[in-house]
Length: 105
Image (cartoon, rainbow, N blue to C red; front, side):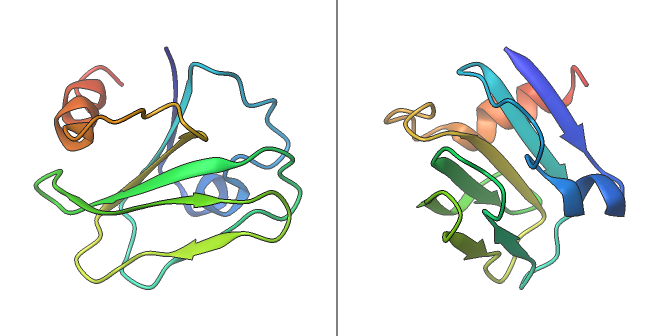
């Protein structure tokens, strides 16, 4: 699993743009404010996004479509995690997985 931590304003604004997103890439956005907008401009593959609160509980999960898709961080958001569409599978413990991953980056 390739974990890409995005914690500066510039990194978060860039997101997955200009990355060749691979099956095992996980993009972790640290310190996301409610209302933050995520877009798919310049991204050519569908991306799943999961919004987590400060306790790593899942608030919302959705799929953003290439070029036209987007998502807005719901109230209570502290972090966001992006992967290729379907890469999260049916996992309901995404928050716990993220918490484990975060300790390694």
